[in-house]
Length: 182
Length: 182
Image 1 (cartoon, each protein chain N blue to C red):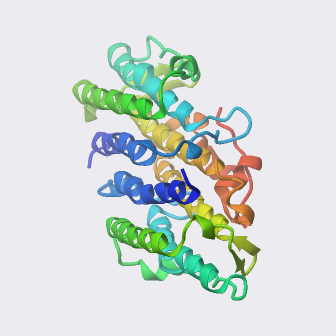
Image 2: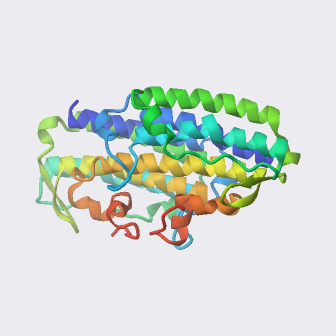
Image 3: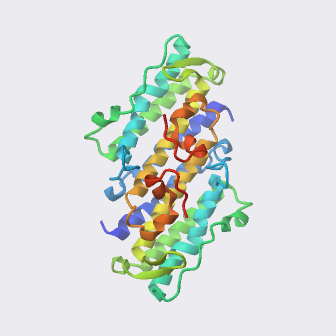
């Protein structure tokens, strides 16, 4: 299987995973941030994923293909969601993300092919990067932030698990990132 | 919404999440453990979730309702999957888990009601626990281990993301559990 096919396969799954996990889930599971300080609730995380679809991944693909390393990428606004999504429900955000992702995968299929993967762009902080690295990062960024949603949902029941918390790494790491479950 | 209803809602989602994420996914995403030492690949994690369905959560519910604190729970065998599941594909494990989970939620609905939640059992290491704590732990245990699957899948592309690794906490934490993404 080609790199583009395997990467696209993963990217296509994320909206389905988020639907299965979040659409209609009771609020009691989604009202808590993953970590106590500067953490994100699932609502914030899905908003951040939407920002990526709106301004980042496919825009940067296009930048690489049109300008190579001569024009650096625009910076990714990690907090764009905060104001934009205040009035949206979590279900609405998940469906918005799913629509944008489908559109972006269609755009990607038109824009790029396997032969383009070694083409280079310029990241404003990281320097030269390849299209292959950009697309792998798009997919791993999905995995990273979806895992963050699981951490927030677990955190919402930090007290309810009682003494079992000692065995649940996903809760222990909220207080001590280096904690190992007992 | 009652505690049993919200907990069951979450427990019902896990098989759907695992199907969306794993059924038919290219092997290149699932051949890596979450951490370098004693880590688990997605295949191991789903096997561990199957063990919980076979021997733990509903058995312990029954133990509480029949024996209270007079007979402690059997110990949870955290490595039962290793030999049992050697020959099963990941897809087969996901579907096996989904069947067991559906059966166990049906059993739970027959066994327990909201009035039983404060009843107590005896954990062999943790001491007295309530049915409410057991059921919350069942759900958070799902979240913890599903997040571990995401960590393994991300780890499989640790190299492919190139310099972006500096921004991907899910990868940085493999080497240094206390790492914060840059």
